[in-house]
Image (cartoon, rainbow, N blue to C red):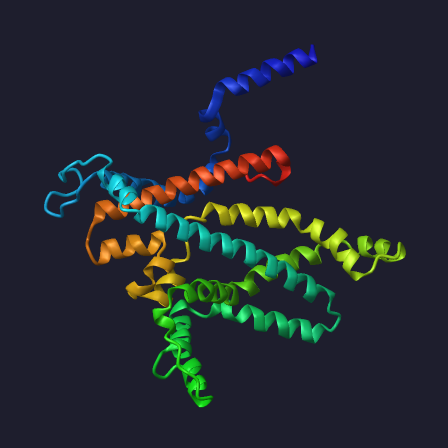
Length: 318
C-alpha cells in the first residue's frame, strides 16, 4: 500500500510539471532570474542578427529591408578559398595552443610539485604567472621592439656581430612559431596553477605507498600523478574545444595588425570578421563567417562530448 501511494504521488508530481516547480521553488527561480535576463539580452536577442548572413546588407534599408541573397555569402567564402584557409589557420593554431599549452602546463606543474624548497616554489609560480596579467597591447609593444627591422633588439644584436638583419615582419612562416611561443609565454602560468591545484589535492598516501613498494620519482609521477590529472585535463580540453573556432583575437590582431604580408599564415576567422566590418563594412560576409564559426564549434563540442561520454560518462560535461 505504501509503495502504491508513493507511485501515485510521484505521478502527480510529474503531471504538475514546470509550473509546479516554479511555485514550489519560487525563491530559487527568483535568484536565477537576473542570470536568465542577462543571457536573454546579451546572448539570445542578438541572435536575430543571424539574418545578416543571408543578405547583402545596406545601411539605408536596414536589417529586414536589405536584399535577401540566400547562401551567396557562404558560397563566395567557400569558392574563393577564404573559408578553408581561415578554418585551417584557426583550427591549426588552437590545436597547437591546446596540445602544447596542456603538455607544458602539466610538465611545469609536476616539476614544481616535486620541489621541496617553499620559497623557490613561490617565486617560480609568481614569475610564471606574471605574464598572464600583461595586456596584449603591451605584448605587441614588446614584440615590436624585439623584431623591428631598423631598431629592434634582434637586428641590433645581429649588427653588433656583423650579421645581416632579419626582416621578421615580412617572413610569414616565422610568425607561426612566434604566435605559439608568445601564447605559451603568456598563458602557461595560468594553466599550470590549475594543474598544480589538482596535484595538491592528490592524497599523500598514494605516494607513500608507492615509495614503500620501491617506486622512484618518475614511476610515481607516471603511475600516480598523471592518471590523477586525467579528469582535470579532460574538462579543460572540453572547455578549450568549445571555443576552438574562436581563436585568440587579441593576440593575433595586436601582433599582426594590418600587415597583409602575414595574413596568409596568420589570418583567423575572428580577424577576418573584424576587418570585414572595419575596412569594407561587409556586414553580410562578416556575419556569414561568424555563423559558420559558431555552428562548426557547436557541432565539434557536441561530437567530442558524445565520444567522451561513451568512453567515460563521469568526464562528460553534459
